[in-house]
Image (spheres, rainbow, N blue to C red):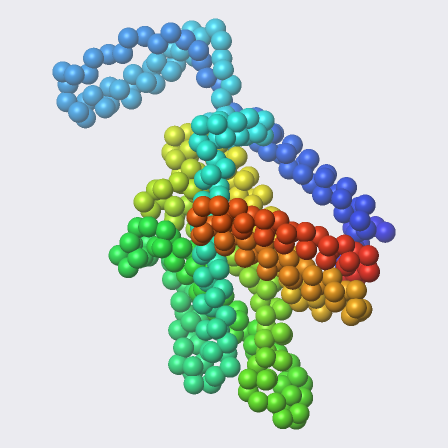
Length: 370
């Protein structure tokens, strides 16, 4: 098959090879741009600077700028050795080497865990708020008429300009940061839920109405499966918004976190560390996306499996038990002190075992993705 054919599909080998090639090309482009934007710094013995203590501030500033220009010209003309500096864009190698300093001196693992936990609570709060409100506005004409326009308009608020209000309302602790991150998702997720409700096909609602279903039965058997199975894909995209606000949230009352580290490293000129921290966010975001994709496949298997054999059903149920156990174990380890926290870790590990066993059953049966 031609790789340039419109609408063509890649097989497994082609996909892997092209992904590897894309990474290599990106690294080469990164290295080339770093070299093109690099500069040569002269190495010399600095002369004694002129004394500006006897002149006014404006005159001293003017003389200082003139002196710096002259010193730079003299240094470049007299220097016998030059050092290459990457003041605009660090090289991939320098970025890689900066991980050592981040690990030993800046405690990057603990700061990354803090940001992940902060983000998790933010988008979990957003999901718990947005889905019920979206269903109420989307299904009840009274509330749709009252609030639909306002909800659509709130999306245009510049949240970064409202940090002062969040600090006045919620203080400067983690509660404010979590609320700030959650609102950044809520303003987009509620309209999406309403839109997904409008996309439910009339044939389903008419069928359950003909069968005499009540309002709650209609919601449970038609709207919930249809809407949640589609909103899950939207959540995967929208939860990434919280990472775009993480620097702003963690700058308020700096108490650590990867966003705060990026700001500090940027202000002090450690661009290699900044790029390393950005790579960490990209990796965490990729893993987060894979986790959401796995949850979507387990909780909404009808989107991925064209057959409903007993083995597939058992595999999905086993994986669901594992996911519940992992979530319970994490909550116990996070909120229960002492030796009981270790029990939470064992529960989470048992949940991982259930998930692996469920995946083995699914793999054994064979699955067909859309």
